[in-house]
Amino acid sequence: MAQRPESTQSYEQETRRHYQHDDVAREYHEQFAAKVSLGNLSHVLVAKAEQRSVRQILESIRSDLSLVADVPCGSGKLMTVLAGLSLSAIAGDVSSPMLRIARAVADRTSTVAKFVRLDITALPFPDGAFDAVICLRFLHRVPSPIKSAALLELRRIARRYVVVSYGIHNAWHRLRQRLRGLLVPGKTVPYPETRASLHSLFESVGLSVLRQLRPLPVLSAEEIAVLVK
Image (tube, rainbow, N blue to C red; front, side, top):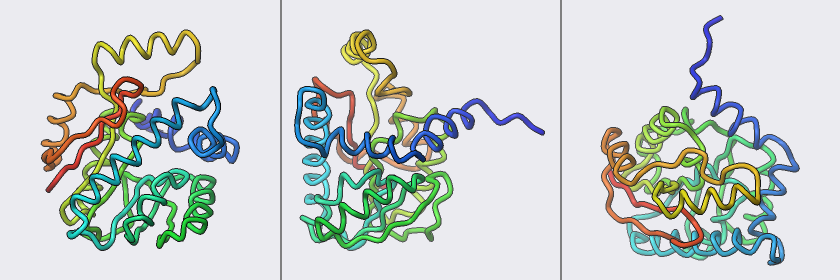
């Protein structure tokens, strides 16, 4: 049997399999949805800033939007944003436990959304099915070949806009990650990129950067970009 490329094995083990457990999904959700405490304060601050940034982006193109996709939707972090803008959505994730939580959040916030279990590298939607596609908290978790495969699929199903987040690799965030690693095992940004390498990647799949935001520059390496076909 042919050996799978290392990048594919990494995606299977670190992303697809990791989030298939109820306790992992619950812990992920509670990092930003539970009552604020010293232990989850940074997660809550980053999540709130991320939601504000996405809301700002979607508000700026609201007249172009009817149906959007949230892939991967995780545990439903964007449901309140979508509900607040009266947007209909298809929300998808590779994790069934994540989807169960996201459905409950959608019900609680009266979000108009349908949910589907899927793999972002082979999306079950026709070309141009969505006015905008949102992909948060994914690209920084996977190696470059998976990034490219996912972006090609996101571009394919988007009519015009693709909104993505990613982790930026710079001197400050390298230092911050090293210091954090002394206190907490694991990496919050396993596969960071420089801004230049990301722009090159976007261009290679036929997407150009329209706008960039940094939700919480000091506490988070995350950047959010609006890409257009």
